[in-house]
Length: 280
Image (tube, rainbow, N blue to C red; front, top):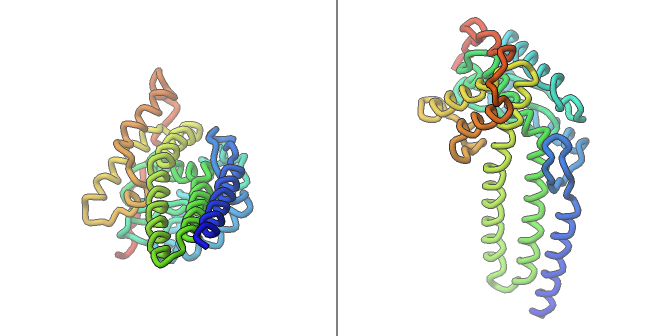
């Protein structure tokens, strides 16, 4: 019986490995080879399905029409001026009413959100473009789809372990394996995808006419907010793999070895009239 369980578990593991590596494809925008569990239509459908629930968690849509109009304008510029325009994703940019939680995030397929708490700390269009460009990078980088594929692969391997060790201790072993796999997946997402999204953010900002130094300013704002009274969910959902500001500066220097051209600007300031504070 034990030999049969081991054989079945081994076969399940082999099938999981073959399926995972058979799903690998090269992203035309990033050039990175990824295992992808979803096609673009499925990513869009998943994002649209999750968007209302995610918005509710952060207070729903903000009522400030001027702020929403500016976020729409900058977001559309980032998409229309860059390779993001050639993708099948349905980009939508939304300001959420949460005035206490500093955060911005993207869902698969294109929905992108920024909380009022983060928006209120931004000083100019370039900084807003840095936040939104980073999130566009997550979408076109297909990071969520890649993470889903890794998660499914992990579950299949844990299932195979559970079958192979299905004695009195099997459940505990399977749970332990699941915890280890999930931790590995989270670390991989943080270290690789965040740096790639920063790099894409620099690229998309520059192609849209914004000075990419605005993204370094965003990192400084986030660092301050993480130690202040406001809760910075951005820094927990977007792990810092070292000094991101240094890596962003390297990316800017690589793209512009002679210095950032003068035609790339910080854009209009986000003064108090453009950053009206929502009730806390």
